[in-house]
Image 1: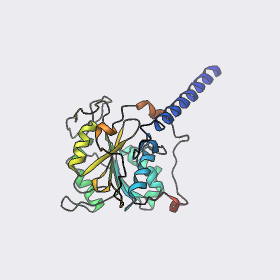
Image 2: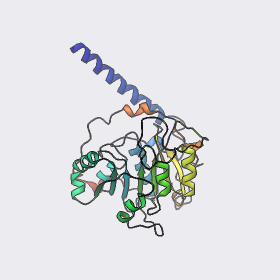
Image 3: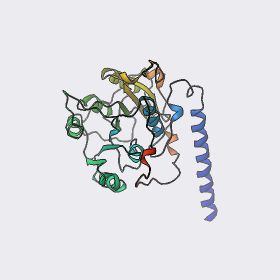
Image 4: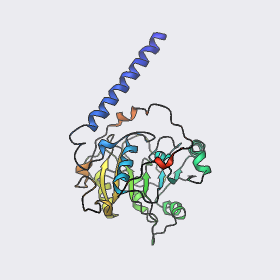
Length: 291
C-alpha cells in the first residue's frame, strides 16, 4: 500500500514538472515574445490559469482607474479572475447562481465583505436581467453607462448574449470565456436559452471570431487570450495607444492574430498552496500601472 502511494506521489510530481515545463516553453516561444503580446506575462495566483498575470499587465499598460470590478460565475471565489485584485485593495461585485457558492465566497472573503469592498449576491444571470443587476450597483443606465475598470464573464453558456445585453456599465477591460474548439475564422454562437446550464460538452459560449465582432460593435478591441485557450481579453478602443501615440498591445486586434487553441490540460498546475484570504497588510504596495 505504501509503495502504491509513493508511486502516485511520484507521478503527481512528474506531472507537475511537465506542466511547469510546458508553461515555460509557451511563454518563452518567439510568438509570446513578440512586441505587445500579453501571453508571456501570464501567471496564476487565484485565477484558474494564467489570467492573473495578464490582468496585471493590462493595467500596467493602461493605468488603473476607479479600481472597481464585476465578475459573475465566481463559484466560491477562490479561483476566479478578480480575487487577486480584491487582495490588492480593489472593490467589486460578485454574482453567482448558487446559494452554496455565494455563502462560501462570503466566508472566504469575510474581511473584504466586512470592509464594504466586496458585495456577493446570488443571481442567475440572463440577458433579460443583467442590466437590472448591475445598474444599481454601478449607478449606471443604458442612457448613461457607468465606467469601471474590469468586467469578467464566465458562465459556461450564454456569455456572448450577456455581454451583448449589457448597457448599464462600460468597463475599460472585459474578460470573457471563448470556445476554442471553433478556431478562426469560424463564426459560432451557442443558441441563447435563459436557463442554460453547461452540460460539460463543447456546445457553449462563442468562437473567438464571433466575440471579436461583438467587441468591435461595442467599441472594444481584442488584445489577447490566455495560453490555455479559455479567456479572451478586450480593452476599449481608446485605450489601445498611449499618450505618445505608441500601441500598447499587439496589432492587428483580430481573432486570427490572438487565438490560442484549447490547452485545457494546462489547468492541472496548482498554485502551490491552497488559497487563503485575509487582510493584505501592505495594500499600498499593490501594482499601480501608469498610463
